[in-house]
Length: 172
Image (cartoon, rainbow, N blue to C red; front, side, top):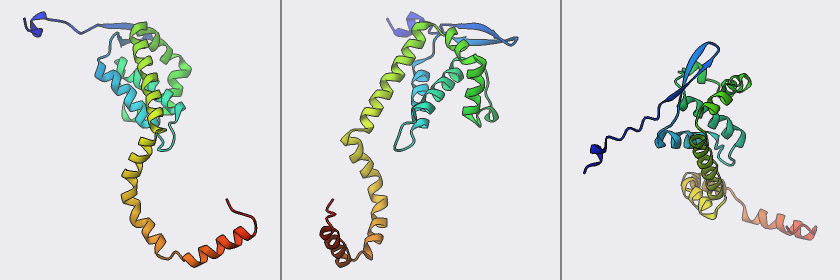
């Protein structure tokens, strides 16, 4: 038997909620690729290079959840200031209404995977391997700049400064 012969339907349907007189459809199941997209997009956009902005991470996770689970169309103007959009949705109770309309097991899977991936991401960023990989990315581009700065470096002056510092009791 072939898989397609099973005629499996992966559509879990929608739940309709009413918000300010408007009917909003909330998906009851989101495909795995879309769940992964929510998590990865939030992490990538909250990564500030040297730190993961955890507040931005939570804001973006909530927004992308709303974007993916509902049939509301947010245009470029709506998305121009994600923090302002989040504030409007959060203060109005809209985010809670959407999350409440998603089945508990569905949202729990999304939330728990989000937390696991963030934890793994932070562990990786703090690892020696991440430091080495970052050096391999940035070192070639910075090598010429460092070489240029070292071109005028006077070793004798540096030795004099170190001798003065040592005589003054500064040897850290």
